[in-house]
Length: 304
Ligand SMILES: Cc1cc2nc3c(=O)[nH]c(=O)nc-3n(C[C@H](O)[C@H](O)[C@H](O)COP(=O)(O)OP(=O)(O)OC[C@H]3O[C@@H](n4cnc5c(N)ncnc54)[C@H](O)[C@@H]3O)c2cc1C
Image (tube, rainbow, N blue to C red):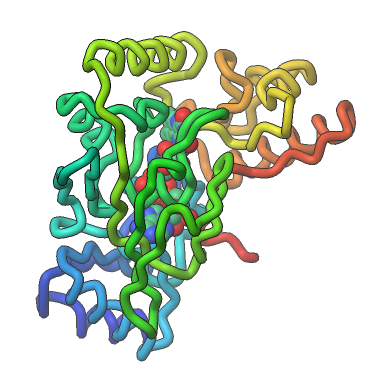
């Protein structure tokens, strides 16, 4: 009853779009995932507060989703409410001395393009990464050797049950796909400190990364990007390739023949197919190389 009561209370009442039994395949770049009991896109901070208050009162679990570009959602979906950050969270504004503030719901690609157009350098490593600013901060997105975190001046989060919290970027640990920000807090806005540079030099750096991506990755095929994290000083793609696993497939899920750390949805893949491929790849690499690969992709709706 909790999710239904929450649906009734949330629908039409305020600045949010509320859907019941919404397929997560429509909200993930994998195009995989069964229905979430509720999916609420909140367009303002008061709407977010009200949504969380109501869900907590009804005992409904919830989770924050960005663009779903690093998510494998289960075939049975999610028993709870998926919250997405809408309009008011999509703003990007430029201040003095290279400061730029972006709402967590803003597209990372928009932020990257706007910084380029203002000749500001620092987040070239994020070019071509699909997703939102909130997702990028949460994942510390970037390349293998450079990521967005060190450019963060401050992050504002909502600490459920308490309220707004501000972290100075320098007080947060940032690493390769790692941040020390608490996972139970909702990132609302991040302010970055960028450096002025020559626009052509910034564009050249971005173009170089985009070309590499086009050359090495299965661009255009539904995926979640890299499935596993690179172990220190090793390339996970090479480890998987050396096990002869390129093109290994279960159902519609296949290890990309272009980049072995991508498992692509060749059409009609289920989450169970992807999980089977992940398990097989993990076990083969462990057996052959003794390396226990850790997943970069986040699972949604699977039993713990
Ligand atoms: C083709 C492709 C290429 C990719 N290339 C790269 C790459 O080069 N480098 C890289 O780092 N990643 C890459 N990725 C992975 C993915 O795009 C990034 O991890 C991205 O930052 C995720 O953003 P998102 O908005 O889609 O987050 P989601 O996938 O929706 O969520 C990811 C995690 O962040 C959490 N989250 C999202 N928003 C918030 C918020 N506001 N507050 C708190 N938590 C939040 C979610 O709960 C979840 O745990 C790639 C993915 C694809 C499909």
